[in-house]
Length: 102
Image (cartoon, rainbow, N blue to C red):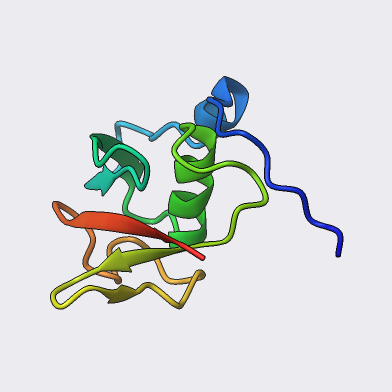
């Protein structure tokens, strides 16, 4: 089987590509690290998608590239399954999400 899980590391170039446009509506999401339980704040435009949030989580060094994980949101927490859904539509502005490694 092919995919290798890399050690989590910050990918600044990727983070920069996800940087929010301050002139557009902002979505602030608290993300809990699966390893330490520490929280980080993802600041993305609401028009970004769940997939962009997933990219942000990997680029911020919380999860190694190639590691399977689900983003758990809501109460009770359930996986955000629709990766194409916008963060606004998913109701994530001001929300806290956790990462469940698979």
